[in-house]
Image (cartoon, rainbow, N blue to C red; front, side):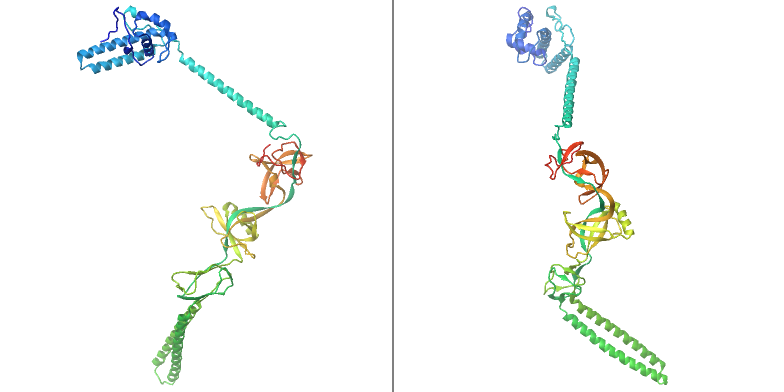
Length: 529
C-alpha cells in the first residue's frame, strides 16, 4: 500500500493519488504531470515555475496552490485509511468507500464555499503543514451591476441613432429635394367641379327568371307518333308539339257515344209511357201507383243518360291529350322525346320545356336595411328603375322596372327578394342568366360633382388639390354618392378648379403647370401630404 510520507517523513503526492474533480485537482494534476512526486519543502521551488507553465486542466494561480494541496493531502489520507479498513474488515469495504467518497465530496463543497473568505486551511494538525490563508477578490454582484450598466448604455446609443435617422428622413422629405423630387412646377391635368344630379343606387346580384316556365308531360299512355317542334324554336300558344297515337282513345269515345244513344232512346220511351199513364189516370183508367212508378223510371233513365254523357266527354278529353300543344308563348328547349317511344303519365317523363322570354324578370336581393327606402318610393307610386349589367359590370344589358318584392325577409342572409320586369325585345336576357342589378332608389338634385379620380385619401379623411393662381392647395371634403366616375362632395364649390393627376409629386402650396397628358407616376396609390 503506498504511503503518503517519504523516507524523511514528508507527505508525498503521486500522479495516481490525485483526484480529478474540483478546481484544486487542477493544481495536483499540473504538478504531478510536470514534476512527479513532490513534498511540502518542494513547494517554493514549484511555485516559482508555476506561472510559466499551464496544464491541460487549465491555469492555476500561485497564491491558491498551498490551500489546494493541503486539502488534497487530507483526502489522500482518508482514502488510504479506507483501503486498510477494506483489507481488514472485507464485508465493510463498499460502505467505507462510500463514506470516504461522501467525505471527500463534502470537503470539496465546503472548500468551494470558503474560497471567498481569508481562512487558514485545516488540512493537517501538524504545524509543518499549515498553509497561509488565501484570499480571492471576487465580487459577483459588482460584475452583474457592471454588465447591466453596459447593456443599458448600448441600448441608449441604439435609440439615439434611430431617432437621429428618423429626424434626418423627415427633414429630407420636407426639403425641396425630398422624396417628391420636384424643384420646379409640377405638370398636372385640371378638372372643374360641376353642379348636377346624381342617382342613389342599390347594387345587387340577380338571376334572370322567366315569367312562365312550362314542363310538358303526357296525360295519357300511348305511343309517340310525331314531334312537331324544332329545338330552340320560339313557339306560339296553341302550336302543336307532340302527337300520341289516338286510336285506342277514339275507339273508347265511339263506344261511349253508342251507349249514350241507346240510353237516350230508353229515356225517350219512358217519357212517352209517362204521358200515356197521365192521360189514363185522368180518366181513372189506371191506379195512381202505376203513374208514380213511371215517373221514377223516367228519372232513372235521365240519370243514366247523364252518366253516358260524362263518359263521352272524358273520352273526348283523352283524345285531345293525344295532341299536345304549347300552353304559352315562349322558347322551347332541346328535344327530350323521339317518335316511337311509349309514354306513361305515372312516370312523369318531361317531353318538352317552354320558357317565356318576352317579357322576362330578374330576381335579386336587397339588404333589409334598404327595404324602407324602397317601400317609401313605392308608397308614393314611383316606378323604380332597375338596370341589368353583365358579369363584369361593364356593359348595360337592359333596363326595366321594379315589379314587386317578397313578403318575407330571409333570416339566414338578412335580405329580401325583389322582382324586376324587363321587356327583353332583343332577347338580351336569357333564363337563369347571372346579372348585376342597380336599383335607382333616389336622385339627388343640384349637388357638386367632381371626378372620383381627383379625390385623395389620408387615413379616414378625403381631400382634393384646389388650384388657385397656379398653386395647389389642399382642401378637405366629405364624399357622398358615386356613380359613373362622378362623386357628390361637399367642402368645395361648383366651378373650383382641381388637380386630376401627378398626385405623387403634388403637395400643399406646390406650383403647377397645366398639362394635357399626365406624366408617369412613381406610385399608383394616393399620396398623403
